[in-house]
Length: 214
Figure (tube, rainbow, N blue to C red):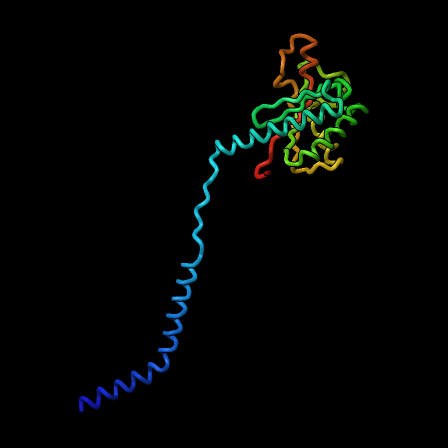
C-alpha cells in the first residue's frame, strides 16, 4: 500500500512539474542572460572631479587669453587712450573716465559716450562667455543744485542702470548684466585734489567668466 501511495505522489508531482518547470526554466535563462549582459558591459573608471584649485587656475589662464584679445580690440578701435584694461586674477576690468560717457555731474549721456558704449557692445557680443558687472563711481563732492538725485550714490546707481538698459536695447543678454552704483565709495585715489577727484569719477565694466562656460 505504501509503495502505491508513493507512486501516486510521484505522479502528482510530475503532473505539477509540467506547469511550473517551464516557468522556472525561463526564469533561470533570464537570470543567466542578465548576468552575461552585465559581464559584457565595459567597466568605466570613475571620473575624477576637478579640484577647486585646479578649476580656479584654469579660469585664470583662460581669462589671461581673453584679456589679450580685449586689449587688441581696444587698440584696433583706437580707444587705448581712453579705456584702461586691467587684469586682476580672473576678472578683467575696463575702466572709463566719467567724462567719456556722461555730462559731468549728470546722468545725461554724451553723444560720443553712446558711440563708445556701442563699440563696447560689439566687444561684449564677441566675448559672449563673460558676465558683465557695470560699476559707476563718483567723487565726494557736493550734489549739483537742482539735481534729480539726492546724493552721489544715487547718481551712480542711476548711471549704472542707464548703461545696463542701453546694452539691453543693443542686444546683450539680460542674464549677463548687473549694475551697481558705488558713489564716493572705493576711490582709487584720495579725494584731496581736483586731479584725484577726476580720476575717481569713473565707470568700470568688470568681466568674469560665467560658471559652466567653456
